[in-house]
Length: 310
Image (cartoon, rainbow, N blue to C red; front, side, top):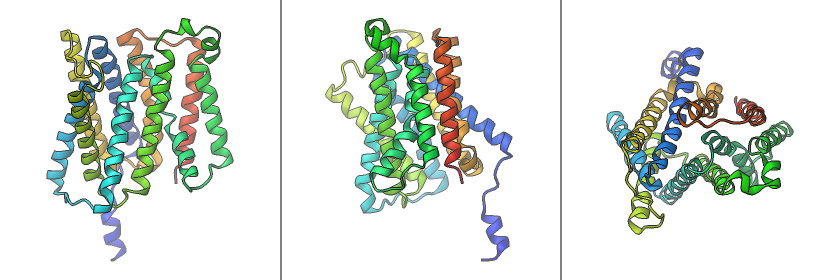
């Protein structure tokens, strides 16, 4: 193939300021989705119903993309069990994260969720991959130190009752969501590389949708399929599904032009957006010392993301 043909086949990236703006916009919509989730949960909506509605919108978007792009629906036989496992992990991640959002401030839940790069690095190493470098280990330690400040661990140890009954479970669920997501990412990279991204995403979200339907039908989560008790809850449910669907669609459609290898750290704007939206919509605010800890976590996450770039 000639060099001209190769150049013509390469994706033409957006100008970097535009790419960063798109990614930060997507991150803000994802944050808005989680704030809307907290509102609808506070108005009686079941956890499973919220995830089911969100997954249904994502499946419709991805299904349309598969049709428009005329992607093959043939899935390699050896990939099927791994894809099912990845879908189950994403279902667990969604359930755990929304459960955390229902118990603790949204920004804290998202900061916990954003520990997934640390967990992915450790998981990769444990499963035979490269050992994290000294620089990465230092950045991970900085992130963990920032989390200790954000989570007010000394205050919790001094008086756990003052932190509220859902604090400890919320923290555990937030970290658990990051663990499930790290596992899904590891499977995607090491077991599902031969499956097209569109088909992989469609089948993963379809698995999430099926799991929520089965869990709701079997009553595995008390009040998991409860309908909103007010118009505010209903509109928040619609809002979270639309925000997630739009953000997912924009990210997926624009991905080839976003130069994600260089610009991925912009997605770490999500906790910052959640902090602002959580204050404006929910009245949730972090203390000054928690804001310092959040800044440390965000700085570490961005550095960690940049250290992985080519």
